[in-house]
Image (cartoon, rainbow, N blue to C red; front, side):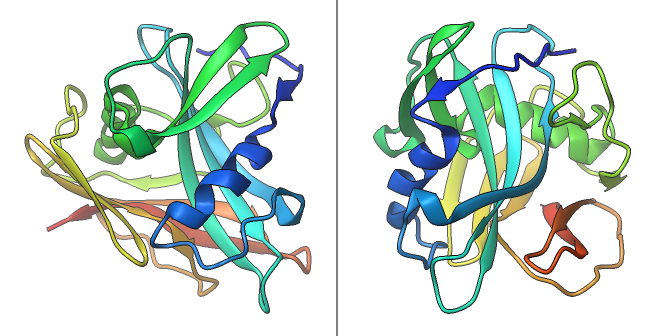
Length: 210
C-alpha cells in the first residue's frame, strides 16, 4: 500500500486544477484555485509502487451555484508518452521531489486500477491515511470487466464525464456529481463527499458502460 507523506506540494493540487479545469468540456466554472475545495476522495495503489493515484472530489464555489467534480489524478517521477492535454503540470513535492501530475483518465496505470476497482479486483484506500482501506467507498463489481491489464485504448470527454475504452469493455468516469441519493447497481462505484452545508452526499463516480 502507498505511503502518504504529510508534506507540501508547490504548486498545490488545487492550483494545478484551477489552471486545467477551464480546458475541460465538463467544467463550467471560472477556474479560480481559491474557490476550489477538496470535499472527498480516495486513493488507489499501483502494484508496482511507481505511480501515485488519487481520486479527488472537488467543489467549485466560484459560480452561481456550487458544482462538484470527480477528478482522478496520477503522479509520476518522470514524463511519459501521453497526449499533451493529459499533463496538468509539474509540482515540487516536499519529500519526493519533482512530480508530473496527469489526468488519471489518460494514464494507463491509473485506468488499470480504476478498472480493477470497478471489477472487484482492487480496494479503495483512504485519502489521507496510509495503509488504510476506505470502507466508505461502495463497489458493486462489474461482471464483464477484467480486474487488471486494462490499458486505455481511447478516452472521449463529454459534458458530464469521460468515457474510456479498454480492451474488454468501457467505463465512464462521472465528472459532474449530482446530489440525488443513488442506488448501487452492478458495475458502479459510489463515494461520499461533503456538501457546502456540511451534509454527506453520495454519488456514482465510476460505472461500466454497456
